[in-house]
Image (cartoon, rainbow, N blue to C red):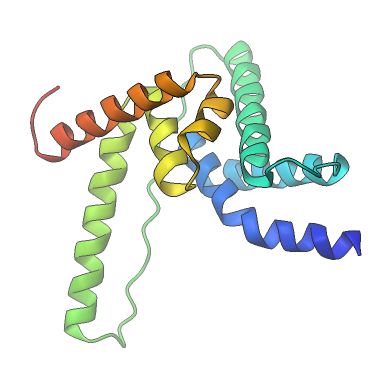
Length: 171
């Protein structure tokens, strides 16, 4: 019975945890490794009755990423991570309008992704958690160790900066 519950939790939250980790590390393989470690820790500590699963998983994922980042920083202070762009392929069987629509959507997504990357670290995390993971401001505050008021301010400022970036104004 517990195995079924764990499998359902994995299937339900895999995408959200992966996207959050990918937004932090910009590396597909590393995000997958950290996601697997997150779920391994979740399964080992499966006493989650009464807690909300997704915020807890995202907190575990964030802590794993930060631990890994600190370890790497100590080992190699001079080397910085590089952003890898993931580009999908267009199927040739689609009609011209579908292809054009997908190309425009991909371009908009790429612009949004690049704009989010220009934000401060805390603003980037708050935006990803709020809009892509669908967490409440209270849960984001818990994960980022911010008060509710500070979380609201961070989100407000991040949205304002994103708007300026996307409208082409200089910050």
